[in-house]
Length: 254
Image 1 (spheres, rainbow, N blue to C red):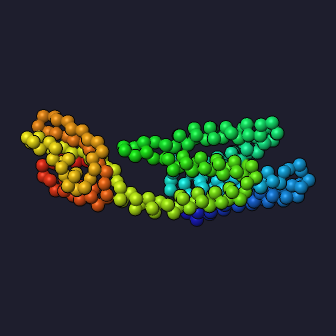
Image 2: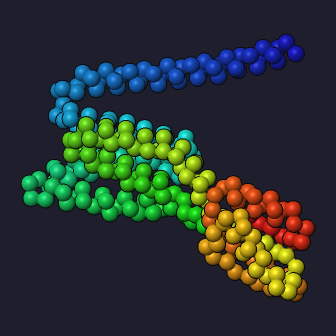
Image 3: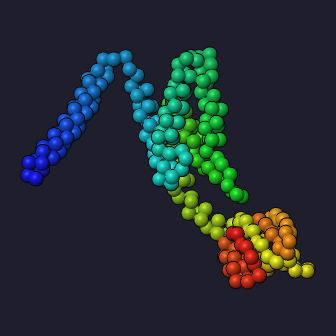
């Protein structure tokens, strides 16, 4: 047992030794590239302002993307970082390639191209459309990238700050607005009774809920109704409690 344990410890030690050596080699390579880049930056034909634009685009795109990533949205950290960097580079290259004749030729297509990416994150569920805020974040991130590429650094930083305020602070207002005005779908199945098929329309009015659309279908002795209703959250809850206590209701979806 002792010899086998020694062999296991030797294998573990060798693995950890290889891991330490790999980490050390990686650190050495990173520092080597850093010092090489620092020493040769001014000797090479590199535009320092272009490097600044690239780093600023990555930072601003990463900040906005981090907020989307925290909220687990479809377009997150890496996506918005790449969008901001790409729009910055397209704007820079548009000015260089187009020169004085048409410096906006390539940059003008960013607005068109970014629309395809934004449309891919919008989807519909029931009576709600999700992903519009994320699509708008993609759109405004591309605009900030264009501002960086054209040299408007203060505008891009200020825009990033305003975007963060809108994405972080304003959801608290959305919560109270949603409580004051909610749209819900109800599906209720109940036995047919003479002159009682419209009783739920009356109940909605009694609970101060506005009917946006509704449909009824009869199968045998059962009636199944579907309603889309608008009103305050507390009024919805009062109506749901009333229906749950109604013993005649066979099926209730809300």
